[in-house]
Image 1 (cartoon, rainbow, N blue to C red):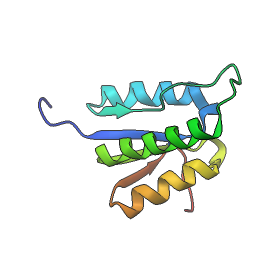
Image 2: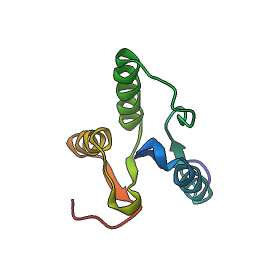
Image 3: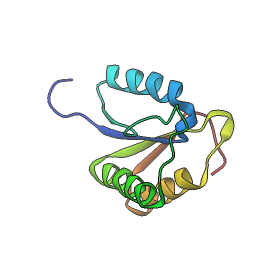
Length: 104
């Protein structure tokens, strides 16, 4: 398929960095444009409150640009920020898919 590509935003806990990379590769090779988190905090860098608010808002703007989201919910884990992103995506009419089956 050349030309029109579905745009997907990855959502989930940043502790699942390896899974983000795997799913980004898989979805890209399926012909999707993949938006992801801006960086993985592997060094436990301290992010201040203003930065956290900004990063959360930036991720919702990515959802606005997307056709849907793909939730990386390893072991069924969905944290507060991810739950907020899922709610936002559903509220704005986006398709929501999950790595692992969920009862949400």
